[in-house]
Length: 237
View 1: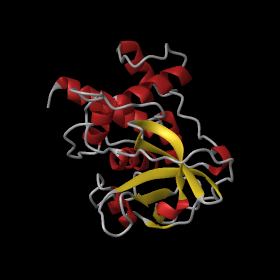
View 2 (view 1 turned 90 degrees about the vertical axis):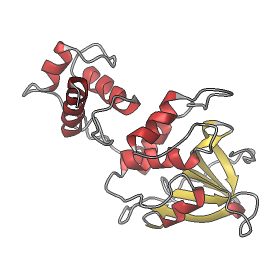
View 3 (view 1 turned 135 degrees about the vertical axis):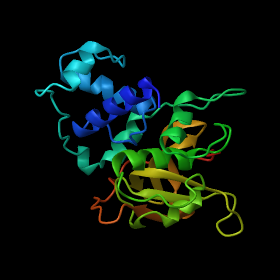
View 4 (view 1 turned 180 degrees about the horizontal axis):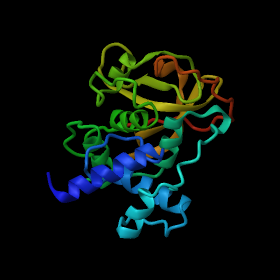
């Protein structure tokens, strides 16, 4: 193991202890680590950037380091939905090459993923749920949208529930889509997901396509809020 990996691992461990980092401690830099460093530095009176130097290390391991505030849920929103909102706008790279942040999600999860031209809605939900509900197992094919019907336990159309849709055909196809619920309307459900028009967006879907809703075991979720409905998504691949 290199010295760089040792330092990054120690930084991740300390950030996790202070409540800023909720992903896997692996000694590898990535967007999750950078975000945690920025938030730590902002809360501790340092210049809020991702660089970790001697001043940051001293502050991070100081006895009076300020921990992350315990955030009150926004309208009952769970931590994984907050993480999903933080990723709005992330877009896959068109043509050759991959978006580094999307590839980092896979690396953080030890998840095989060849490139962002492969559907990544399942990868996005895996990242969000690992960040917000790290103790809930993801012991299934996370890249397969319909496989998320095996996650946790059954839920309703609740704020933060994981919604699984069919694509192509409800029973004669393996194609699907998965996202995190943010709202509902008559005949429709709204959510934040990856690979929605090739990006992380918040959009509406027909409730007639819903195969099921899931949540971490024991999680108590509020009903998704009713909101004005706009046009329904037809592009999740």
